[in-house]
Structures are given as C-alpha cells and as structure tokens.
Length: 252
Image 1 (tube, rainbow, N blue to C red):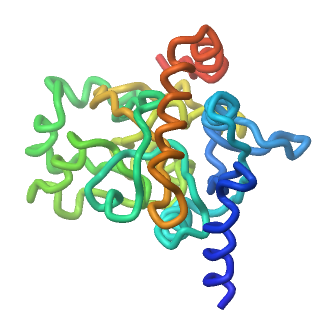
Image 2 (cartoon, one colour; image 1 turned 120 degrees about the horizontal axis):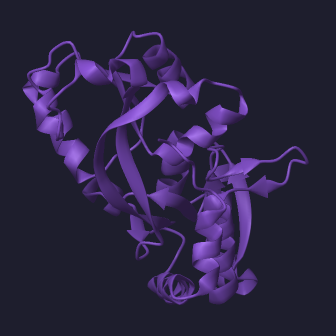
Image 3 (cartoon, rainbow, N blue to C red; image 1 turned 180 degrees about the horizontal axis):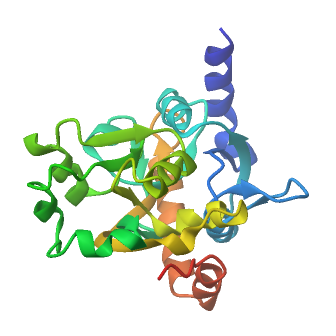
C-alpha cells in the first residue's frame, strides 16, 4: 500500500514541484558524503549543473545500486546517474543523451607487468586460463566487455563482488590477476591508504557514454527533453571542463 501511495504522489506532483527524486549510491568520487555529511561528487556536481539549466530540483535518496534499479523500475525514484544504456533497462527507463564518458580499464599488479606480454585486447586473454578477472556486481562495463563475458573460455574466471575495495585487496594479494573498472573509482581507495602505486593498467578497454536514467512510470518525454537540452548547454560551457578537472585520478 505504501508503494502504491508513493507512486500516486509522485505522478501527481512531479510537474507541480519541479522536483525529481534521485537515487544514488556512495561511490567516490562520483557521489559521496564529505566529513560534514554534505553530498559531493562528480556526478552530483554535473547533475546540479544540468538541473539548474533545466529548471529542476533534486531530492536525493541513498540506497545500494541494485535497489536503485529496482526502485527506478517501480517508479518510487525518478532518476539515476551514471547509467549505461542497455536493452534490458530500456524496458523500464528512458535515457538522456550522454553527459560524460566512463573509461573502462583492466588493472593488474605492477609487479606482474612482465607476466602478461602481448595482451593488446580482451580476446588475447581468452587462452590465458590462469587469468581471473574481478568485477562489481550489477555494474555494466560497456558493450565490448559485455560480449567478452559471454566467451565459454571465461567460465569460472570471473569473480563478482559487491565492493571495489574487496576486489583490489584480492588483486594486491595475487588471488585474482585483474580488476575491470573505471579508474576514477580508485579515488575512494586512495583515501583509506590502499597502496595504489602497486597497480597499473594492462588494457584500456573502451570509453563508454553514460546517461541519466529516468523511470518510465513517473517521468515524461517532455522532462527528458528539458534534461537533454540542459546537457547540451552544459557540454558547451567552461563549467563542464572545470567540474571534470576536480575529480581526475592520476593513475600511471
């Protein structure tokens, strides 16, 4: 009953209050709370810049990413950030034009660099049966990695965890050989003192456009159009480059 009432309220008030409920997960440097418990991050800064141009206010609701997807499908939240566009998600969501690119790399231990000569693309890893790859649950790493995951040679060679720090610890201990990720996510681990200088990039897999993802149940095509127009304006402004520059991580 609670969800039904919440869905009805969102449908009735979305235009009146010009506010969208945004689901977010703690993921430094994209969205996180600082020491004063203020919401910060690359995606937060970009979303606020987009919303100010589109005439929206954001009401933020923190939850795990898997729940963000479920609540967006139901319509109890209306928007999510940093989303890859997939056919499965298009069944319950509409997508903005891209508002930034997400880099996908394969990290290894620096000491293992000489162990993997001749690895220039993902397919070169298929015959290397000793190479196990760590990845985050419920994250999408783009079309190239999606296709790579379907290879029969990878059976039992993909290790899934809920948190990036778990994967990096396994990598540093030599229990897995690589971690696929966006290197900007390492900023959070640098704050807790993990030895990131021991890591290096084996492969840059691809640049993937990321989008705002809106619930089909509780948003309209007109709202999406306003957001798209705002994104275009932001991309052409000096503010866009200034925001990105604040969050780049210097991985060698």
